[in-house]
Structures are given as structure tokens and as C-alpha cells.
Amino acid sequence: MRGFFSHRPIAACSAVAAAAALVACGGGDDTVATPTALPQLSAAQAGALSVACPSLTGFTYAGVTITSATTVAAGTLTLAGNPVPEHCLVAGKLGTRTGSDGLTYAIGFEMRMPQAWTGRFYYQGNGGLDGSVVAATGATGGGPNTHALLQGFAVISSDAGHTGAQTAAFGFEPQARLDYGYQAAAKLTPMAKALVKAAYGRAPDRSYFGGCSNGGRHTLVATSRLAEEYDGFLAGAPGYNLPKAAVSQIWGAQQYARAYTVGATTTANGNTIADLATAFTPAERTMVAGRILAKCDALDSAADGIVSDTAACQKAFSLVDDVPTCSGARDNTCLTALQKDVLANIHAGARTSTGAAVYNTFPFDAGISGNGWATWEFVNSLALDPLAAGVVFNGTPAFLANPLTASIDALAAGITATGATYTVSGMDFMTPPTPSNLSVLKGRGAKVMLYHGVSDAVFSYDDTVTWVNNLASANGGDASNFARLFGVPGMNHCSGGPATDQFDMLTPLVQWVEQGKAPDAVIASARGAGNAGGVNAEVPAGWSATRTRPLCAYPKVAKYKGTGSLELAASFSCQ
Image (cartoon, rainbow, N blue to C red):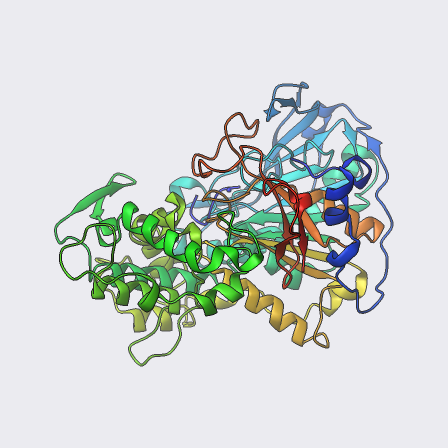
């Protein structure tokens, strides 16, 4: 899945090696107690297309125009060398209208429905500012080698109500804002289920909603707004406070501008921008990552290049004390006092001029060395976030002439502002209205799984932890019987970084929803040389190309058992 402005299957327990099965399927000291029994939803039943695919051009639904319905032969699409089975691809538009700006708007979509169907439907939340109908496959995780379509789901994808050509200006059109924020998903959901019924002769037995980055935000919004419509929610890097994060990114760019090489430039999206990477070079980031590992790597009882105990690391690592301060010129072995001040501010979180928090804190983690981390900090903060914070989320939208001199106070106020034209604030149309009250979802027996890279530079892992903790507080101190978070140490935004970032969260979510098997851990793999899903060039040279780790349900962390290979998940338990 694409990022905010842009994203191996875990086998059934019977097919996992015995030691790994203990981690993946529960048992031993990995067991997370389930506080209260909740309703158990029944399993989906398999089916098959009951009509010829081309006949679906005649599908009728209020406001819908079907533009094509074609059979896609098996193997036309592949994933990690695996052929995607034959399926029906339906494309169309919903709610074509003339906007207040005189332009034509519609919610574009495509739906892929496999000939052999599991009885499940998946709503694919896409990334960034949307504006593109990407292939409806439902892939998640780094270098995925499975996705919802491959697993037999009917999958829908949409542009959220505007085209790519309209992306730069749709924030000036009030209804387009609302469609992007949440209304496109609400409008498409009943239509998609009707299309499923037309194709298979019955509605889906079970419905799932998922995505990473803005797709993760879409997912958490759906937990509040569409709780009756979906049984399982898979939220990756869920920027559920996305307007705040966009302002935070601009604030961060202004921080780096204090230390960058004045006059240095780079290009992004065809535009010339300040080269903020000169404030904190790759060699310096690698040095800091090494210092973090020196203090935190062994906190999980294994010096393996992964900081599994994120919370303990924040107490153990000191930027002031553990990173040398340059006494002379920068030489990649130290940071200047100014650089330290900037980096400390970044991790402490954006603030207004009065000291009020704009967004959450960010944890220190070894993934600070990752290329994805740098892209979000130094490039996207200038090339992408100004459009979002200045136009799409602002109560008085305007293009930012220079984000490096923009008023953070005004931007922070703008995302909660309304007016005669923009009657719903950015925070209101972009965020879950009841993030800690998921009683409807919980009461139905629906489940939520979240995953988040600890070294995500745009959407804070700490913010997702805050969501989980607040949800727990609203549910007697423990919400793990219907919502669980899996942090990915070292991973950047949705994928990448020095991390085991290849995993399948959808299979365990289905098992939890339909079989009551709560996931205590999910096995993740490194994507070293030869990986079928795509090689992650940032896998450290000292790691096995096929290293595996358990991603543990928060707040547990992966601890080394004291015996066994450091390259195998079976050598670790969640504690």
C-alpha cells in the first residue's frame, strides 16, 4: 500500500514449525489473557461467480455508472511469483457531480472478484491524498507475498472522490474534502456489497477493511463510522491524527532548517526544495543508530541489531549523554550542539509558540538510519505536507508560499477551524469521531489489528500506542479481547528500514474474527537477497537473508529465550 502521500503469508498453525507455532498461535509465556468473552462471528462460506463477468456492466445502483467488466485470466497478475487466480474486474464511478469549482467530480472505483470466492469482502484503503484507483488487491506489509485477492476476497479500491489531476486543488472543494475524509468509504460500502451480491448471488458473509498510512487512517475512521458494516479492521501505520501530523512535519522541516547547509537544494516532484538532509547526513544518522543500538539492543536479551523493547529504550538512551558532541568540525562521529537540539525537539514532538503540543512524541529507534525515515523528514515535509496542511485540512485553505517560514500557530489553528464555506474542520472530517468508544464494534464481535513501524517518521508509533492505551482505559484497562497492536522495530513508514517488515496480518485477523484465535504474535521476515516479494536493501549485512521475528501484541516484546539461533523467531518469546 502506498504511504501517506504515495505501502509471506503466515501459515495456519498446522503448517508452522513447532517452535514457531507456539509463538504464532498462542501458548507458553506468549499468551495474552482475554479479559471478557465476546460474541463469536461465524466463518465465511466459499462460493463462486454466479454470472458471466461481462454481464455486470448491467449492474444498477443509484448514482453508479459501470464503465467496464472484464474477466482477468489466471496469472495475468502475479505476486512474489504466485499467479493470482482468475477474477472479474469491474470499474466504475459513483456520484458524478459538478463541484463548486465547476469541475466534474466522482468517486472512481474498481472491484476485483475472484471466480473461486471465500465469501469475504475487503475494502482497500489507499494512501496519501488518494486521487488514484490503484489495483484492488489488498496488499499489506513490506514486499508482500500475499494479499486479499490472492486469498480469495472480493476487493474494492477507490480514488476517494477526486482524480490525480485534481489532487492539488480538491481541498478547495468542500464536498471533495468530505469524500476524501470518510464519505467515499461510507458511500462505496453498500454499493460494493450489492455488487458482490449481483456477482455471487449473495452478500459477503464477512467484511474486512484495511490499509496502511492514510489507508490505516481510513481504517480507524471506519472503526467509528462503519462499525456495523465490517467485521475485521487491519490498520497499518494509522495516521488517525493526520492533520496534526502534517503540521508536525512542517514544524520539523523548520527545525532542520536551523541546521542545514544554507543554499543547498534538491528536487522533489519536479520542484526545487531546500536540501534539509544536510542537517543530518546518512553517515550521522547511521552513527546515531549505532549509539541507540549500543544502549538498547541487548535490553531484549539479544544483541541482534533489533531494539525490541521500545519503552525500555526510551529510558535507557540519552541523546545528550550517549551521542558525542562535536568539539570541532562535523566528522560523522558526533553531532553539534545545534544538531542535538534539533533532533531532541523532533522526537519530543511539534509545539506551538506557546509550547502547546501539536502532535505526539516519536521514539528513538535504530530505524533512524533508514532511507524512508529520511524521505519523510527531509523531502516530503516540504514537497507534500504543505499542500495537505495548507489546503486540504485548513479552514481557510491557501497554498503555502514558503513552508519554512509558515506560521505553525496558524496551521495548528487552521485544522480545527470552520467557516461559511468549510463547515466541517479538517480534524473532524479526517479523524475517528469516537476513537476510544468502539462499543458497537466490540459488541458485534468484530476485531481490530494494528501494525506500526517504530521508526515511522511521519505518523508516530507513540500516537498509535496512545490510541491503544486510551481504548484500554475506556474498556476497564484492557481492550485486547478486540484490539491489538503489533509494533515493528526498525521499520519506517509502512515498510523498509533495518527491519523484519514482511508479514501477513490478514490471515490472523480472519482467524481471530471467524475462529476466535486471538493473535499473540505474528511472524515477520527480513527481505534479504532472493526474497520473492522484493529485496529490502536496508537489511543489515550481518543478518540472515531470511531472518524471522515474532511481532508481539503490545505491550509485550520479543525476548530471546537464551538458546537457539538469533535468526529464528522460534528462539524468541513474547514477554
